[in-house]
Length: 580
Ligand SMILES: Nc1ncnc2c1ncn2[C@@H]1O[C@H](COP(=O)(O)OP(=O)(O)OP(=O)(O)O)[C@@H](O)[C@H]1O
Image 1 (cartoon, helix red, strand yellow):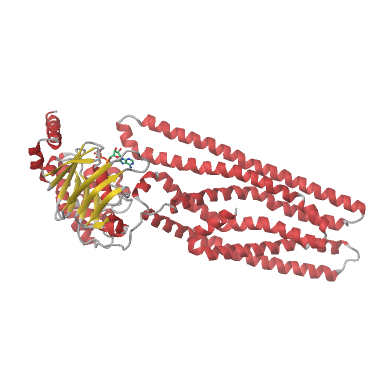
Image 2 (cartoon, protein in one colour):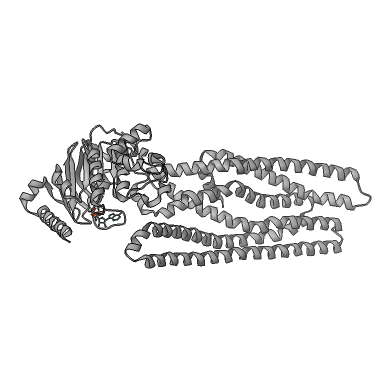
């Protein structure tokens, strides 16, 4: 449990002092509460002895009244944290997680499924913060109040203290046992929740493809399987969460019976008075209440702990290190020096001993069969992950000496999958450069050949992407992402060319937009289009992670080797397409 508290402190970040104060207040308030209950003994004894001693009664009542006031004030202070600070902690934690997501390697980000990250970013943070304030203090109360009652009772009558203690030690092993069981069950629940969230994201995003390939049923079955695992795990957790409640309430009843039995025995012996036993029973009931509460609290505590674990796991991912001194980019030539790379968890090398030098402001086309490593080269230029061997340099600087901000500021990426945020079209384009004026956004849109279709949308540039849903065609989305890149005006452009998925009209519009984007830039393009390949300053031909040929179209055609056969094959398929 102490470990959990330590974790809570680390999540609280800069609010740790406030949290510590709230916990301290809770400890003091609980001690005060314990003393109030313990004062029942002398009060009831004084009331039931005859003749009643009014002075003692009033003094005791006065003391209890003052203590009730003090406790009330302390509890209000505690609430301050629960209500105000916990929201701030949630906000700060989300910001820190967001910051961390920006720094962790893209490879790592890709490996964690989006549902998993969603759970951390939305679900877990709210769960934790919702409870962080009140729960820690409640648990303290549950533990500190009984301990104080026992200590004060010790001063009054040690035998009564032992009577109260009878039920308490049993609670500890029971507490431990069920906490372990429930902890595991709740961790399972969080894990299956994340799995289901991932499956739902996968299912909904993949639905168009699944429908087209008539595999909806198969994917739906995977989702249903995940849902049925979730149901069974949840029901096990539910059953387990009932068990400790029943066990503890039985224990509490047994404890009260023992107190009654011991008290009766002492009265019969003549060493205990009836009023004292009566006070003892009142306190025993009060004493057992928090124990019964403990089970409910513990299940929430476990939920919080598994949430904390997930947040910690994300926060502990090491960002890609930046070798000092951090450098600045002044040129945009790209060099690969004997680069070998394999993806995490892969045994085979994806790239082997790849070397090339791309001068500034030239266009290089990457060609090769599917899986030959074209996308990997493009990814590594923006430091998707670090290479295991060799060096990648931009403008003569090792990418490992560039901060992510510096690196990404100089690179624009236009890939086939265009992600549009649920925001206005204007803001979607402004992602390229947040300081751009409306006029800059429109100029970039004109250059990207998308001003016209944007103007025709219901609210022009102010139309939100959600409002028009899937009404934007693939070509239109592509042109919006090109407008973003034009606005960014980075000196290096990485481009995955649109394939034949676009119709001819869109293809021409996208091509014009691309022409605007790439002029005067260092461009690396994963080429699918014959015209790009022919016009490129240099062509790198890849096969199984190695560069097997490089040169211009004319040079490679003359050589009559790998590239020329690829070219012939493409030409034939093109003719076949036109003829079909
Ligand atoms: N994130 C990843 N994790 C593990 N392996 C990967 C990952 N991405 C790609 N690979 C593997 O690396 C190899 C090269 O993939 P890459 O995507 O670079 O090829 P490509 O030439 O761009 O192919 P395509 O033209 O089909 O897009 C392939 O065998 C692929 O399965």
